Length: 366
Length: 257
Image 1 (cartoon, each protein chain N blue to C red):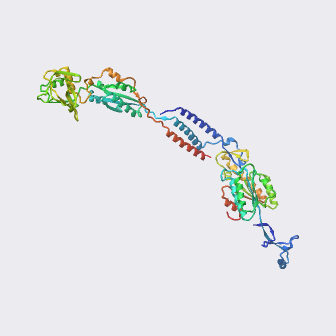
Image 2 (image 1 turned 90 degrees about the vertical axis):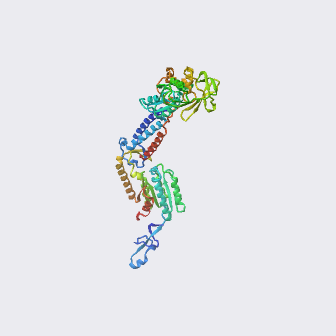
Image 3 (image 1 turned 180 degrees about the vertical axis):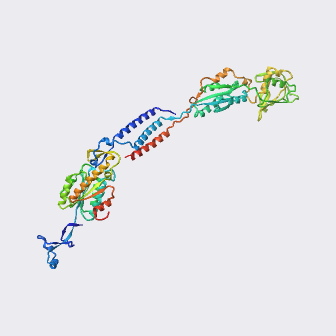
């Protein structure tokens, strides 16, 4: 327990000592009382009249001292201090770039179970969530340790991450896990029979489970015309490719023909998404070259907007060091407003009760 | 109207007495003389009006204990009760408060005299020393004097004045008012201070309680003996005794309380 105004405790202690001294002095002085028949009282010495200690004397002294001390305690405004304990908050990276299973294993291997595990897909949102969680943990601990279990890929950072990181008043422990290769199945429909697309996917290392991308190539048939190239994800695959019409209203364009018309549109499904391609790759090896692989990477990337290949870039030491920071666990007081409330009412009520008891006892004491 | 203490020639026969030289011959019982050849006087109790004055001690010692059970309050209530009895008997009744500038109500029979007495007693706060002896040496005192006091001043002049009043044919009724707290003081130690003489301050210890009670009782007995020996009626009234019961002891001593 700490006190907002500890000086009152010193004053209360001094006052209690004064009460004790006055009580003892008062005991030695016997009360004078008018008594008409005083002359019949035997002329005893004063020493004979020194008062013997009575139970009510001790009780009165206790009540008086306790009342004074309780009033001092109330005025000192005691506040409960949280126990000396470090709460733990874990930010578990659930972004596609981090191996989710590896994150789970890392959390399970922690020496003690964390107080809170927050799933995050971005560091900015994750650190803000950690701030909010820390406020609720402040009553049970005096410091909070923040642990980020992540591959810390570039995709976790945004323009505000650096300043939001600076708002956390302590070190952030980074538990690195591997960047997961893109683990989602690509279901293709009407893929070219020559296997060029599968070869490209193999080059990109697509395998495993995850979000399903349904990539629908145009059915074999007469194209409407040809286009001179397709670009997506900052790369352009130049070459004549047969073109089928793709309506812009049927989805969100993620690849375009060089003339600006949509080449591939994406439509969300209940699980995963469907991509409707308006072209078929030519028979050459254009798809296997760098630009072609880049386009293919985009066509088979996770569903949703905002994807860029560099989102999956593994963490570098500079980024990790910036995230980790320095110092120890964050102090609860530095994290937010003090939620502790001073305990004042109870000591005051007790003091009033004792005061009433002292008055009653004094009246009964002859 | 009361039976007079003087036997006179009222029509109601009381007793015979032998004729002595100097008696009024008109009081001879001639019929008895004719029957017995002996000369006797026929006597009867005279009816007399007995004036009464209530002398209430207004000294500081009467203001004990504090509150409505003090000796002063009890004495006041008693005085009012006795005044009512005397007034209803047709006797003049008055009041003297023996204290510093104590008010005086001359004895009279008019209708408002009891209220006057009550009002005078209400207005008075007991203080100072007792002036009983001064009050009793007034020459205009009526026949009956009722003293209500604790008699703690122990002034021999009071007894002398009472004795002199009785010698003049008067009647003295001494009512000693005692507080229960004086008979049974507190068991806690305290310093007892005489309210009329601050120089008397004695520490009171529980161990000395028995000794104190013995001394006080001895003084009361001695005081009662002296007053009775002087011919006065001496009655003790304790403050916790109901006023009506105590008054019956005073007014009708032969009756059961």
